[in-house]
Image (cartoon, rainbow, N blue to C red; front, side, top):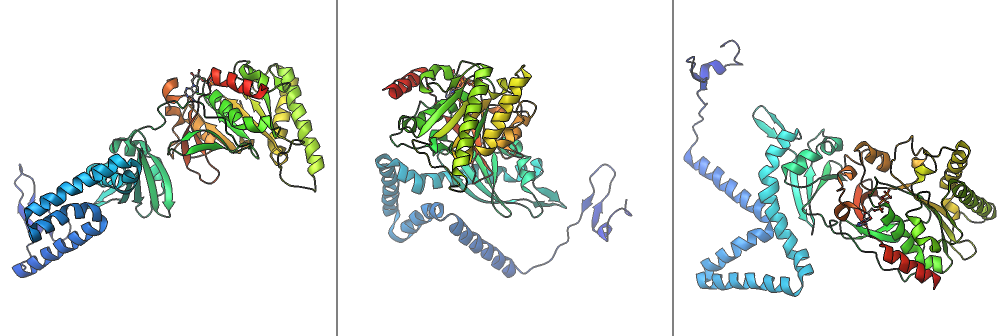
Length: 470
Ligand SMILES: Nc1ncnc2c1ncn2[C@@H]1O[C@H](COP(=O)(O)OP(=O)(O)OP(=O)(O)O)[C@@H](O)[C@H]1O
């Protein structure tokens, strides 16, 4: 045993009786009391300065009444506390948003920093493998800052040197459960720093009724719902192609109808046309009058309609060649949105090989050449696998509603989307809670954003048909 002990440790050994633990005599360095006092005083001072610097509001809440009591007496201090409590309460009642923005969320952030994150930081980091315990020392990522919004905590973290974003993305489950949240999303703040987003509650849990038909005549981006952060979810349809993937009952219809609703003023003004392909004959047939002649349900008529769209596209391409490089909608050349509900019925599940080829070729042509000349495709499908939808990569913008399998998330939103928190396979199958909820990736950012489409009821569709007929 003595030979196994490193260096001169053997000389500190106090007891090695067989039935007790090995006990070492600690090294004692005799220090004058004065030096010890100076060290403690310095630590106290440095700690107080750090506390004031990091948490000025919370420190002032404690320090100011103490200072007043010491300088002017306890009665004045009690009066001050009473005023300090009632004034914010009145402010909160009178103008809640400004109170929350300036005071409320900061206090909550302080509370959650102390009570949730700092308290659980060390065990969660060590158990999840994001921190290391080496030779008696903890090497932990640095918890830098907490910001609270109305629905989530945003935690800024400095990673350990040598860690990668993937190390954190692989552990979102550990982090979420470790800090008592439903989920966790990871995004990059800057080199070496991450933002972890922990939702406190789900702002999208309640269905959103159909949005009002906009007054402005525009081909987009159209508002189709709300983002998790409360901002409007604007979907760009002009100048792109959009693929909506979701299991049965995921609410694909609500994305399609909300888009149609947002384009309605442009349709009425003649600046947009919606061409509808409805092989299931369920979804779009309800508002058939909105599409006029440009509605197809049988595979043959769908192939014809798609080829007609290709003709429009090619005719425009011939006219625009060398004259302009982008499309501006006019009554002569309106924006054409080809809406396809359950596109796999027309491609993968189509038994007639000739029709399947015609439809696939037309869709591929539209999605590769249509956007510059004002022809866009909005397609919905249930199964995003390559065997089912081999042209899914030709859709620049993709929306993942509730999906059956976790692997399907990256198929729709691109590699790594699920690791970053796009848990489309965890969306509730209960229509009230989960229908129309999904994840999108915006052009500007690789981080998925959670959204909910507004539900356009049958009555709202009927009202739209009447509005267009009028
Ligand atoms: N945005 C929404 N908000 C709340 N409930 C919704 C929403 N969208 C749809 N629903 C509810 O979910 C049900 C299914 O929606 P929908 O038919 O649009 O799904 P889907 O994805 O098109 O399904 P399928 O592929 O089977 O046609 C609807 O009957 C409606 O009750």
